[in-house]
Length: 355
Image (cartoon, rainbow, N blue to C red; front, side, top):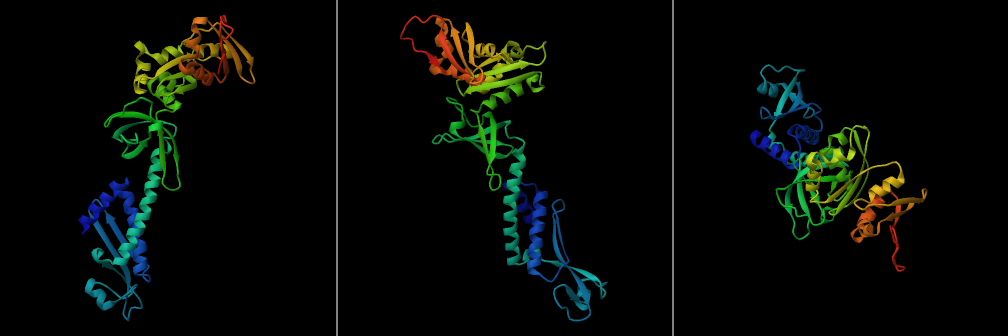
């Protein structure tokens, strides 16, 4: 009986991600309720559950009397001596309960109580596991790819998470067994059944990858000032060095582009522009429009954050980018509305580009 009990206990723990030690406490609590229900007048009892020695015992502690017992909290001396020859009136006797025959009602009560406790344990474990992971990057293994919905199931520390299609990098092909990094955007429904939300399109995934790959960012020597991203296409990241002897952009690129290459590989080849941040808005805006050259930047209204940028005629399409991507990312990076114009407007029908 005991062997089967502990095997079931171990299996229950594995299924619910709960340690046997925690489960034992919950089982004891449930059995306490069951004993009180089955023996309401007996206030003294023992429950012993020791997984190491496979010991599982339950007993009632009864007072030994020499007259008729008033309830199950007492036992007559004659009956007591059959159990323990040294029993004396006024003493206490431990009467073991048959755990296998403890009673259907008591067992059902224990089962229901444990079931409710397990739900709460699972909730608490999930919250404890991911509470410190919110807004962080984790590495997980892909266990399943649903070709119909596009949803990818990943496994992190024995917990299954779901990466939905809209949170995947466009054009990326994910395969079972592959290890990927995802960004934990948050935990919802914390009070009932927590749901862990993850993403590979969030701009802060790039930030965390830079922190992981570049020691100077991790230790604070180089600081990330701002990021703008169009997942799967291009990211712009502005960095600043707090040490005049450390080149912020160089530190991010690494020897033979080793550091930036590792990040680009993780992001499925996404282009990354690393820009030196400047406290001067005009300088910052000019750098943000890279790889295009900029002739001049005029901040029109600092409060409304608008500016006009002049670029060489041959650089206009590069500054704007495909579908306006470069200019949009520059605008998000700097926080300025950017009006881009060519150096010489060769056609009266020239359409001003503004973002």
